[in-house]
Amino acid sequence: AIPMVAYRVSTLSSVRSIVIKKREVLDVSPRVDTIVFDKTGTLTTGAFKVVQIAPANGHAADEVLRLAASLEAFSPHPIAKAIVSEARERGIALLSVEEFTSVPGVGVRGRVAGRTVTVSSPRYSGVDPWVDTSGTAVVVAVDGVEAGVIVLRDQVKPGAAEAIGELKKMGYRVYMLTGDREEVARRVAEELELDGYFAELLPEDKVSIISELQSKGHVVAMIGDGVNDAPALVKADLGIALGAGTDIAIESADVVLVRDDPMLVPEFFKLMKKTYRKMK
Ligand code: ADP
Ligand code: MG
Image (cartoon, rainbow, N blue to C red; front, side, top):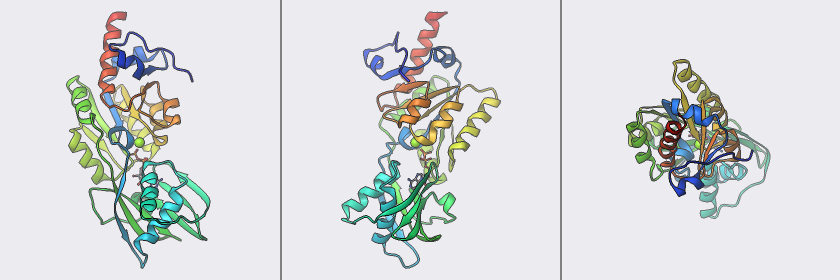
C-alpha cells in the first residue's frame, strides 16, 4: 500500500517521519483517549543481549546455546538474533535444522541433529525459570525435556520515558502489552511510569485486551513493530507502526512513524489535534 498524505505537519522533520495511510486517521485521532504500546522493539530497543545460560539435566551451557542458535538462525525475532550472535561470539558452530516452525509470541521448534528442539517462552514451556527474574527468559527443550534456560536483556529506548510523560500530560491513559514475562513487564512499566501493563500475552490476547478497552467506551490507539502486533494494530481504532518495524506491522497500520523515535508518538497526536482544529 502506498502512503497517502503527510500534510499540514508542524516541522520539516515530521513531514518525513509521519506517514498517514488513510483519511479516516484525521477523524479518529482526536477521539483517541487510550494508547497501548507493545514492549519489545517499540518501547525497548529489541537489541537483546544474552546475560546468562543456565543448563539443566546434564547439558553443557555451550551445547544448550548451540541447539538454540541452530534453530534461531531461522527466526527474525530480536531474541533469536541475540542467541545467534552469542553463539557466533563464542565460536560455536551451528547444526543443520529440519522442519523449522515458528509461532509468534511463543517461540520456535525444529529437528536439530535428529532431535526435536524448542526454544520458547517459559509460559508455554511448562518450566519456571528460577534464574535472573528481571530478565527475559527462554526455555530450551530437547525431545520434550528441559535442557536449559537462556536469560536475555534489552533496554528501554532513548526517548521512551519522555514520550510516555508527554502523552500522560496530554491526558491519555498509557498502557503496555507484551508477550514477555510478568517480572520484565513490571520493571519496564515502573521505569516508564505507565498507567498499567499486561504481560505474557499471545498476539490474540493483545487483540482481546484492545476490544475489552473498546467495549468500555475507550477509543484505542495501538503502537507496535512486530509480526505479533499485526492483529492488534488492525483491531485498534488507530494502528501505528513505529520505526523500522516488520513489513506486516507497517501494512497493518493506519499510520507509520518512520523514524525509530518514541517521541514521534506525542508529536503525531499534537499534530492531529492541530489539524482537527483547522478543519473545524
Ligand atoms: P512482545 O509482545 O514483547 O513484542 P513477543 O510476542 O515477540 O514479545 O514474544 C513473546 C515471548 O515469546 C518472548 O518473550 C519469548 O519468550 C517468546 N518468543 C517469541 N519468539 C521467540 C523466538 N524466536 N525464540 C524464542 N522465544 C521466542
Ligand atoms: Mg514487538
